[in-house]
Image: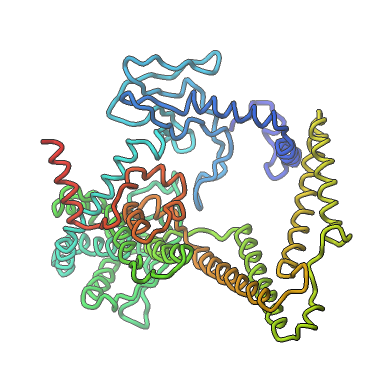
Length: 567
């Protein structure tokens, strides 16, 4: 579509195109980049900082705020999430004349960086928080440059979101009574509203919305479930397999046993069976309602309530209920406490269906961790055999290789030093691309030898330089036992979390004040649970006291303080 007329590739077949030269060039450029000198790295860092200071800071209401994204995507192939109908289409380059800036009335518009172009439009709209916008060619939707996640605007928005979820805690019993009563309604719409609310509340489903299957991936939520997404178990009268693609094309696949929810579960099961009767597989289960109808009903039950608040409420409430108390954590190490936190975090992520794909690098990391654990156990077992032998026999225990004796470790160490020295010398003199590629290859060779050397040292880590006494052996066995316990805890924690994405719930669904208060109560450093980006994002939550609770009474206290400030 974009190739000019007369281009020799215009009438050729895509499968016949050879991209190997491009691939080789990209690989070569990566090798050259790795061989950059200290001066080149310093210059690149200075340029990055210059761009950050030039484009990465905005002045909003006389305050400095970080900009989230100030770089546009270059042209390329569109990937999309899951089975997107537009995967493979070409994303065009965006030029300045396609960009609208949103700045203050008295502000001087920034100079357009591309000669021969000017900005598409300049506006002054204080009711929105985006700084610039443009239309992308794939789906024709607007893209925005916004303030960063750590900005005060996003902080206020996050705090209001979690406060709204906390307010729901005071209304949840009233709302549950409402939809439980509506399950037996004679009116079809009322029964569909009640059944959808039960699914959203108990299964943490997203509300869903209409989508154009030709423009977007076929993802659904509660209100857009189709008959084909439900499979009734013919052997029982209480099980349904629910299978569909949710947000970002993540598979939701669960068999729901409605009997565990007793009478209410049976009513929901019966309603779903009634809703799909005499419908085709492509028909919607909830044909009488949509998100706007559902949200209007919820707003009547609690001011400002919408269906999406339930996920935040259930995630935060589940975290608070799952986190162990101070008594349960008594005498545990910080690492053990973090494992307990991850267990609670995992329950929230499972509830919200937050999954991740196990990558090849992750599998390799598990294998390496498992090998390390097995080696430690073997070394501990070997040391334990030394305790049962006589003092005379202990003198024949294998000893650690001493430096300078011409051992395999000495040879590997010398090889590493030689290759590193050669690489450093060549790096200082390198002028051509080929020489820089050679530098990177030498560094990779040195890294391989270093790994080999490290493995050899680890194999001898439990050995002594001189014949040990019984007390020295006992002390080292105790040290190895502690190492084994830590590695075992780490491996089990990683194995349990390998297919569950813990981060999504932390970022978007779990009230951070619950985590901050729990860490303070149990003397767990917050940086062990929240990475720096999250600490910056949730700076407003860091002053939560140790006794803070996700409760309706806390919401009322916050509201009273707000009213006091207004008055």
